[in-house]
Length: 332
Length: 247
Image (cartoon, rainbow over all chains, first blue to last red; front, side):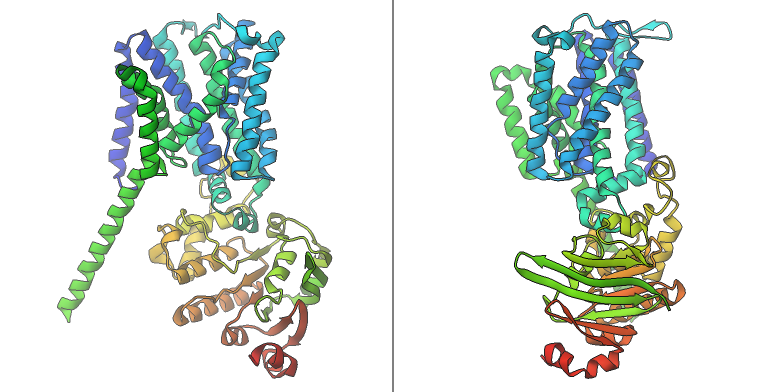
């Protein structure tokens, strides 16, 4: 994104934020639900983007952390706890479990790590389904309340959309801070060359565990918002397919790009709605589009933009060189 | 002069092959020790054993008299030991400046303070100085992956110095670097050696480079130390000529 002038970037950012606040005021209940879902999934995908896109650790368990957060929030808020307290617990719980899940990553990488996290995903699903004393089993948990903030009820779709959007804003700023900090640089070093990173004093073990724990914690935040959004949860939405969906959001948007998850979540949440008119062919069209994209640009949609900007910069640089050369020749 | 690094009877076996077979030597404070020998004689394996990338099968490594055998590479780096690798090891997607900041950041404050503190860990000035020192000014904002091989080699060496190390192990710093850049590199190494009193161990095949840079040279062959001494002594040693220089 380095090719745009800074004021233009700021103006564009402000326009998008204003649009996200103002335009949905005219949306119906369903439109607001979809947009809230986009905000929640963006948070979960941002977490996975941190673990996978920045730190290079493959995870097929992000959906399980959304589940952990959702159940934590559902259980606590139906027992009278306020949502912010539930979010704190969801963060702490998924951070701790994510930390533990990071240990296999210290020994195995890539597809082996994918299998370990896949096993965890299945394990979490079984806990949600079978431990019915806690989770309600296959009947799930219903009547999950939406919170009150400063005496304002958010039970209507529009106020709760603003809760989701506000949470997304806070998470976005936190993640922006994190990836610009030395930690973000260390995560990228982990992805690009762990051997060299170690020799520069980077404690690769600790950063690997942190990448898992923080990424998972954001999954927990997403879950804690998902529960009051749908107001009813059962184990099914948190099975492996959610992890795969989140993985796709990250890859399609552009893994390792800050704005990748926003874009990926938008496509994954909105495209099915737009393609609804195709009825039964929706999944096929979607699948072909994703395959086509990944063949064309393995680094996702933002990868295309990045490539274009890099090419433009190279062209500009060679034009400058040509000018300098012709000047030299004129002098001679 | 006291010994910064003492290596005693280091051994490393890979299956039935003895890659390093009882190597002992010490490195004195402020010296530049050259390490030469034919390909496959165990130089890089020795480096990896000293630096914790490999666990030695036997023997001991001491840093300033303290046993550090088996410490992890990151821990050794915190104790002031730094290295470069034989094959290029820069972070291609990060800019030259970011590579250098990354190379120094873990020496600034605690892990928690690096999360809440400045995004450059206070190292932009130091990185810019290093960039100027290695004459990479015009490339500071470029992704490291876009640099020429020789420039990446310079960056690789510069990264090893960002943490202000006392001891630096350089694995073939001159390999693939063109002659004019090579003399730059040598000047830079000598300057850092003198000004910062940093101690170096240099693996190198370029004899001219080794002989003019190093105060002592150690020759290895088949996992063992063949000779150790001043460059001119080593050059005349019949065993060395037979094993290495004669070819």
